[in-house]
Image 1 (tube, rainbow, N blue to C red):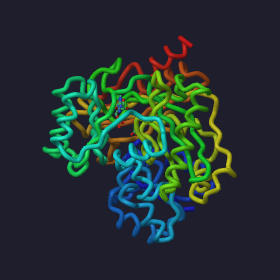
Image 2 (tube, rainbow, N blue to C red; image 1 turned 60 degrees about the vertical axis):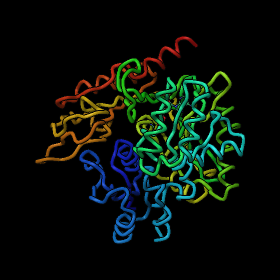
Image 3 (tube, rainbow, N blue to C red; image 1 turned 30 degrees about the vertical axis):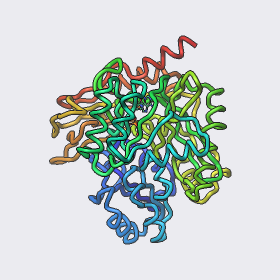
Length: 423
Ligand code: AMP
Ligand code: GLY
């Protein structure tokens, strides 16, 4: 079988490595892939948002199955276009990807179907938004409606900060049309949990839970990033909470999308907050999370491609989706300065014996050598019988990898370990 994976980050590298385990796979193409993915797949320089280019490549190369991993092509309709050209795909169609593509859509969906989430108001008029901010409780959360490279959420701890966020989104258009509408919502508190789930619209199978570490610095200090590390499973997510989420959030969301005529097939990502009033949805994503995938897929014991194809064929109930009872930790190695400005072009050395546990996010090839090309450069994962050992193992591998200006957090998983101890 010939497989195509759309995307070029650490998540896509984890997907490629896992798909490769299937013996029926002869060839994997990554569009565009990256310098590290090139070890495991043939990378072709077609951008993830170039839908026409992706479809043409898939047809010309007689691709048997395509996996569309990033949000942008999903929201732009890559799955619709590939399926129209006769290529079966993993991922939701555009009319379902809107669950991530529009926060106004997802908030209204949750309200209509009584799915627990933060209280909110939607504004299309800046003056009305500013008027609302005069009296609402602070802190308050201001969100741009559309995709904003993960930067469209502002937690405002003062009224001034909230006003500035509204003006920059609605007047200065820092996120372009994504800021034409804003959601202003209640600030929630509690541990965060990421749960990815396979769903074919009839069956929903949650994967092992995980925890992201979004801030750049140790002890959750510094700027928000795309994610500096992950662990799985998340110790806050007990079996009782998992049952509750299945009943009050996961299945109601799948059913709500069906009722709206927007059946979701693919990986549905639930960003949850375990508030004092129960689990609530912070956000939906229409895809695998990054870097959650880098801890979730290494714990998957079932064959990923088989599960993905079952999702496409509405046969998820017939396949086994089994995760190991162990734990995983992933430490992101970044370029110093990320998420602000950073230098790139530095050679990366990774010993051969740990290549399998390194997921490359931001690296290219220059003169035959792997060199840094992005803010988040690598995700280094270890799996073990306990979380403690997985964390130790991941950091031991990190120490064997070298590049100039490397930066990583030293406390990935520590909060989770403490939570386990206090149980
Ligand atoms: P996102 O960029 O959508 O992943 O959101 C970034 C982060 O903002 C989330 O991971 C939460 O930590 C935080 N956040 C979003 N909405 C809320 C909320 N209503 N209350 C508290 N924190 C929130
Ligand atoms: N790690 C969060 C995301 O993928 O959006």
